[in-house]
Image 1 (cartoon, rainbow, N blue to C red):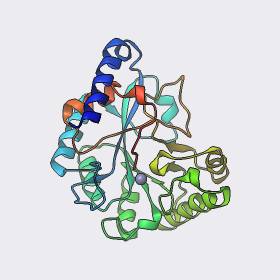
Image 2 (cartoon, protein in one colour):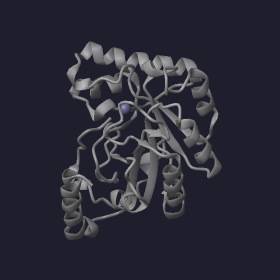
Image 3 (cartoon, protein in one colour):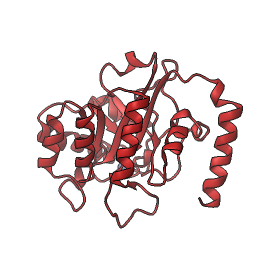
Image 4 (cartoon, rainbow, N blue to C red):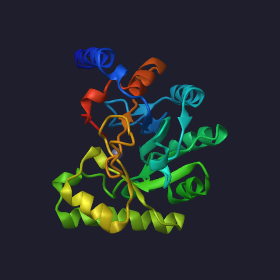
Length: 252
Ligand SMILES: [Zn+2]
């Protein structure tokens, strides 16, 4: 562990034991994965988790939590303790996640950066059709070029959200209504555009438990899981050790 990680952990430990553990755990926690098992050139942070570790996580999650889809009934299911699984970017190796999740009947959402489709390490249009056929997979978009949306003009953002929706809809041949923010970044324009284009569930990089009282369907909270996360740190993240962060740094 680096000094920074150690400090983060110590604060998390104190935050959890002094405060968080006495708060509600009723609600939905969402974990966010990226790549599974690939060696990525740009991965200094640990967004690529090994296949073995991912499988270990999934087996743990299925035995300890009720895993629910982030679908049109999502808000009605916040009255109990649940977990949801998401993937950002559309890495080719997510085919492994599809296989594992189908094997154990686990729903998940995959948000695809449509400008990356067919590039090295990313899913092809044919791959995405396979995900679209699975009853366990919900698909959403993650922009075209993976920009920091809050650095773009209204029109540029509109293009990112509109074009990615069109490209994915053309591949899967049904309406896409789910989105996640690249880098967790958005501004007031993004929220308006999401409404205009009919996106109604949006994964953010805010950290926390989604509850009946705090749910905002345009800012659904998620916590990122990385290569160094053991079962123990996975459980701590789900229990809310890092809810004090509220918005995560370094989001991909
Ligand atoms: Zn991303």
